[in-house]
Length: 414
Ligand code: GDP
Image (cartoon, protein in one colour):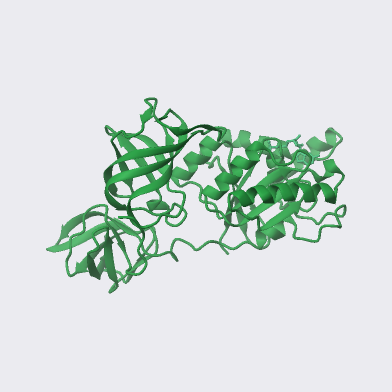
């Protein structure tokens, strides 16, 4: 079975590191010497294992080794493998999303039972919503610190569910746990017999993988046209779905149609298929000439074509960005002049605090919820549907000055 990737978010100190440490420990996903080290260290101190300490250790190791992806942790249940996409900070998180390092399939939101829902918890809910994640577990942590009280759990659960409802999210599970003592994480709690739902790991194991990129509708952005032995070959990379010889294609935005006569790849005689991830050439019959930036799709499974769409951008240049400034946008192989016509929210990308509504300027490392208008219609899709068509960079005088993602479903508008 494929692994499942999930993001873990929560207010600082609500127990994220402890829960990650607990998961690694309970599933024996740490190297044996690390397990021993933790046991000895905690025995010496005469108390339970401090799992946040496990995480500190891992962080140190990651800092030393540049080969390990800093944002990912792995563990395994009998059912499958999991990848935790840890969000050390929102800034890193946004960067990871834009560079495509982290596409999650599920989310875990952690809330401290004693403290309840906090401002940051709310910002995280927005983030989960923005990512379009529907498989969501809320864990109410530190139940030991409230005497495993059912009443307290129900109160926090009610507040959290109510708040998530405001951003149209509804959690799949809400689970009372103690990350520190291990209650309801992988082992059913003996102290909360009032709770008969799934443990945290059972809940994760019940989640499904999202359709893989191969199962998605075909998206084949055109890179260039090339003459090979008298034949016109369209070159590009299959970003989603599968190219099949003989299949009819429609190129967008032009709407021009043709059929795949031949699939060519360097060093092969010709293939029947080319799946997502492959750089491939195709010969068309009739021999239409799509422009660079056009996206080949299967008729009936077309993405939206539009010249105006909402997006989240992350500004990465010391020179601030002003609304209405003319700039270039690059989406996949497409490049077109564009303007940001609205900055609905200017956001501190480290705290996710909204600094200003209806702003006119974005400064270095700030992010913004914006509306972009392009000089002509282009193919864009929500990042969640097709990664390559849902992220972009903004270019000012040959410099990449911002990255962005298209977070929400896009409607047709040409
Ligand atoms: P993070 O900032 O979300 O990563 O939080 P940490 O995992 O570092 O935990 C913050 C503090 O809460 C630490 O002192 C933990 O020992 C403590 N903590 C975490 N989980 C629990 C729990 O289940 N019960 C209790 N009583 N304390 C916990």
